[in-house]
Length: 301
Image (cartoon, rainbow, N blue to C red; front, top):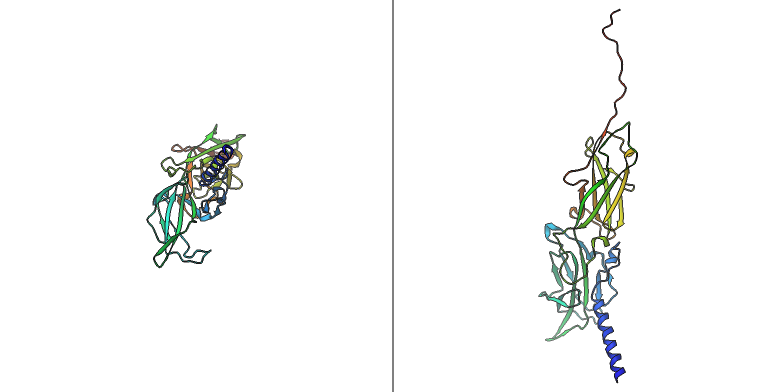
């Protein structure tokens, strides 16, 4: 009996710990694609998750977060019965019901979602001549809202300030950028473990602008955009690459990689900074003068 009790206790502990582990998304690090976030639908809260690309969203400060509508099926695919009403719940990172939602239709409208994971659960009910039966089974959907980024003021390293085109310095201009989350927009507080900024694959685009041709962005890397894991990006540019006279300023753009979420034309999903911040670093390239010409004047012979 003692062994039996111990065995039952061990089994219960395994079951409970397994259930606890299964209530939380298990992102794959580094996060290089939508699937790595482990978002989508899960039947009865159990893995695997059926991935849904639209379950990843950008946070738009102008709307205080994205909005969407979750739509539950009208018919039970197993029994063929039509649901008459629904129970919607918000689930936290421990698998506990965080909130019983008041919506009883098949459409749950959500708005102003904060960054991080969100998990919603739906049960179906059938009214058969006044006898209401609730499903034992349920489906969860896991959403993730990407947190806005913030570029720490990128800076040059031991940079030259000026040179003449006939005396190009040897060596390279080194530029460094570091990215963090926007500290004013926190992750949603619902007990989910959320990834750090360095866990995401980010895309960097470095370019220069010459004040002699301000409408042209000059790529500083080949290819023009670089995608890599982590929150830091360093590049070097040969001074010899600056072949036109003028004053150059330097810029970097950062966004989440398209494999995580294609930003499309969303202006709030790209972040730009000037190298040097409030005091931009400028590289002055001066045109070397040509030879003087000689004329003869005031001749007296």
